[in-house]
Image (cartoon, rainbow, N blue to C red; front, top):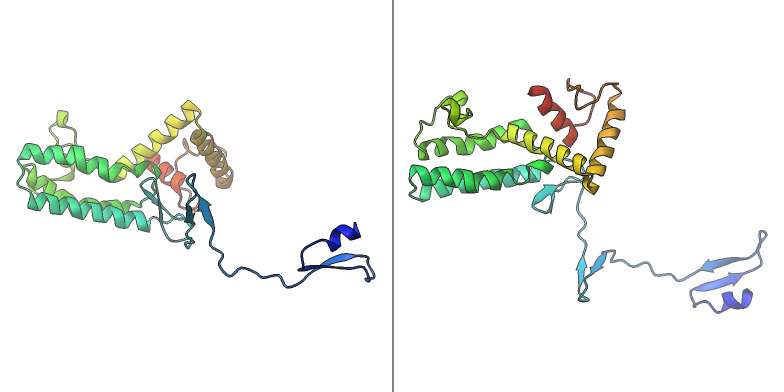
Length: 233
């Protein structure tokens, strides 16, 4: 064995003269100063992995997610999209029908795309809606100060059927849970584990998605947002 150790590279040495027996001494080891991790693509090119802080949002499949769970990056993108829509409505001469099509076919899909995975606070969604609702109402032929009861009511009840962004976020999250739990996908299994962990943290006997009373001691996370939405409906 000693012969094998002596064949190690020069930065290793063998020292048998110790009270506890032989051990290997590492010397002259150079610690690399560049600790950037690299991923190698199938074509051989390398892509560096960026190091970010826990509060910084990183884009994953169109959704900005941070490690500490804050939604600041996604909120900024939401406001930016709303401002672009306002600019589009202001600069383009649209008929009322065309303005309605733009709202339903462009605005709503663009804004609501990340909703199943986001945890945007209600106040932020209200602010985003206040940026766009007045100009949308005027372009589709209604007064900017139309009561909310009329704005969000369905057409069958003589309403305008605009979407409430906070309600839509809750609906999309609830549908996401139902679809993935019923189909037993990999994501569904992860959601099931998250719900069970949340159940244990809550310390209550009733199922958290059925007993939807506020739990102020729980962290403000995705499942908390779903529970709060279910409580309001």
